[in-house]
Length: 275
Image (cartoon, rainbow, N blue to C red; front, side, top):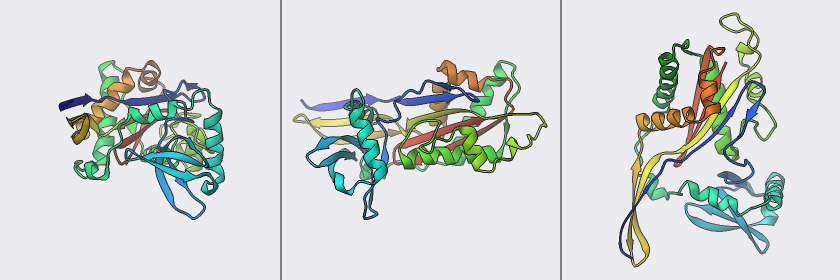
């Protein structure tokens, strides 16, 4: 079959947490994650786990499969592998990976530059627009809180998880305390605020992919890239469409908002911390 095939993408993985309560995550954090796989020689590959083959694990990177010997896996990766194999349906990992089509290095070279500072500001402003429309006091910017959020977004990408508790078991408030967030000692407005609420999301940098097919083979793809305005609208719209994320956004007891965004290849990791 020849011709052009269009794929319109709107993937948004979400999770939210209140100050002490976790509301269901949209993805099992053991599966479907892009993560780093370091070997004993210090080499690292960013890839998805697909399965096992003989004495190795099959990893997916840029649409290609790589066989990684189990003997070269680190202790933490062996633990991850064992958990994955014991899960009810390990093949779900491959399906989660396919939810975000993997782009090649050459395709990524066509992506426009993104200003993370501008994107974070637009997400911040759109979040406050929703509060203004409902007569709720707007959230104030808090640079220290931005830093806490950025660290978590980067950590999710680098260590390959999607959750509020990081692999060290630290909650949003734990992470803020470790980062030296002064608001936990003395809030700027003088009010006692015991902890942080959090929304996290992950989106793709593209909105569509156009594939040219010849003899049932893909011969070329054209990526419909999103810019800051498009991404910010997608992120905030997706959060507002989820009751628990919207609850955090509209919480009248919160006075401050930190937004942190990290981009790895075609993936955009987003953290909102409310205080």
